Image 1: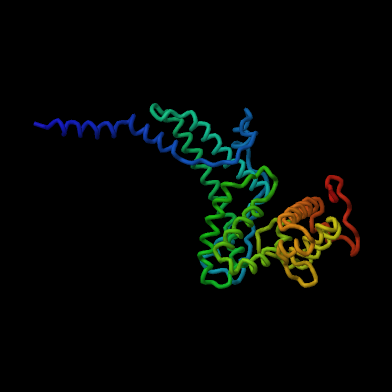
Image 2: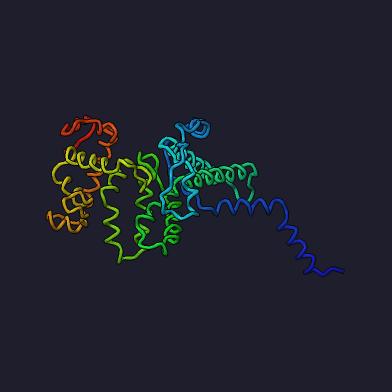
Length: 330
C-alpha cells in the first residue's frame, strides 16, 4: 500500500505537469526577460501597426559584391558577400525592430502570471522572435565594419580575432541602443562605440597612437559621408581635398583651427590631442571637445546640402554657396 509521502510526491509531480502550471511558468519566464527598446511617439498612434509593420521597406539594398581587402583572413571573406543597408532600409529595420519590442512590452504589462492568456504569450514571443531576427540582420550587414576598424587599429594579427570578438559584442549592443530617429547613420554610432572599446582592449600604451589613427582626415571624411569605415575608393585623396575646402569655407576661425589640428590637416599632418589644442588656444580640454563636436555637426549638415560629388564639379577656387538653413557662424 503506497505511503502518504508517496501520494504527496505523485501529487506534486502531477501539479507541476498540469497545463495551468506550465502556462504560469511560461508567463513567469516571459516577464523575467529584459526587453530594451528605443521609444518613439509614433508607436502609440492608432495606425502604427499598419504603417510600421505592413509597410514595405523603401529603397533597394545594394546588390553588388564589394571586393574585400587583400589582407582579410579567409574565414571573414564571406562578410563582403552580405549586402550593405542603404539609409532608408536601415531606418526601416530599426523602426520595425523597436516597434515590435514596444508592442511586446505593452502585452507583457497586461500579462497575468497566475492566469495567463495563451494567445497573448504567443504574440509576445512571436514579436520578440521577429525583433531578434531583424537585429541579427542588422548585425550581419555591419559586421565588416568591425573587421575594418580592427584592421586599422591592430599592431599584429595575434590579437586580431580577439578584437573581432570584442567588436562584434559591442556591435550587438550598439544595435540595441541606437536611436534611429535622430537622423544619423548607424555606422557612425557603431564606429565610435567599437573604437572606444578596442582602445580599452589594446591598452593605455597604445591609446595615443590609436587616437591619432581615429582622428585622421580619412576618419573625418567617413564621419561626413558615413560609409563603412576603412573602405575607400580610388578618389580618396580628392575627397580629402573636398573636406579641406569645406572646412575653409564653412567653419569660423576658431572651430576651423580646432578641426585642422585635431584631424591632422595641418602642415605637419599630425593629429593633436584635445589637451594639446587646449593648451595652445588657452581653453580647457572639455571646451575643445565641445567645439570639435559642434564643428563636425556643422560640416555634416553642409555635406548633406552639398555632397562631395557635386562639389567636385566646381571650378578651382569657386566658393561653396551659403545654405540658408545653416547657422554657420553662431
